[in-house]
Image (cartoon, rainbow, N blue to C red; front, top):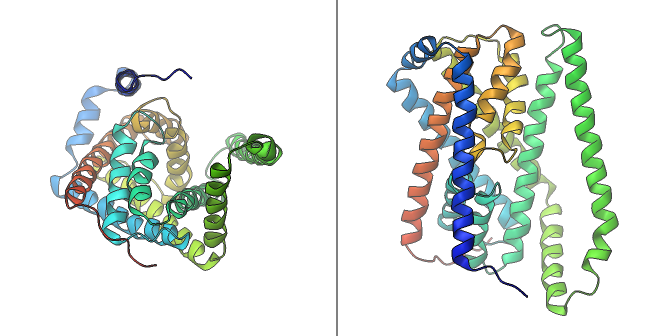
Length: 327
């Protein structure tokens, strides 16, 4: 079997991350080309340094809750990680989401540490997947809240398009689930005994986490609270830039813009998120240059938060391996 040298893999990763940063710069450049630059600069300058730091503090506090949520779900699956290791996994993942080439770079970093430190790696794997599903459900809940608040705020044609999009997403997820069930046995047939043992451990971990619905429910509440906090911080930042909109408009546009940013077009969704926000908030009468100004300052919050998270992960990693905590 032909193996690709590690050097070639690293070069390919660097090229990919460079292309995605260039794509992000191109998207933002296109937005800047069509929007008044002097008004954009003026809106950004309106944000006081104290407001920026307070929003950054709120962003980091929300992620501190995210660490506790991730550890709770992973340990429910049998991961048995202490808080220090969980913090290293989570903060490293937050850094990796922004600065690694893969769209799942954050999960790779989390698992790289968690699988090595846990006495039950299958539990870490299953718990991380469960935590991702909880986050997706929380995000979908915000989208539904936004759509429920739409009547009377937008023309009926736009409402119909939003509802039709949600219907297509639901059908797509149902088809994906059915295809996974149909391909489960053919893909796993003929595998080695060792592989089947590992798979059995993962299945056991999945049963463990699915057997504690109260923990998953509490994790969903925490996840919804975290996402709502990010939404409110963005709205606060937009007000500092001079953009005043009802919260119902943000509940509609912000979750959809975040979902659009998941597309692997730019690094960390930078540029795509701002373009989506401009398009989604314009029908509500929002000035595009104010939306872009708020989006760019928010990206500064996210990037600074990611760098601080990477520093925390580095410091925690220097402390050496910790003994896994009993769940």
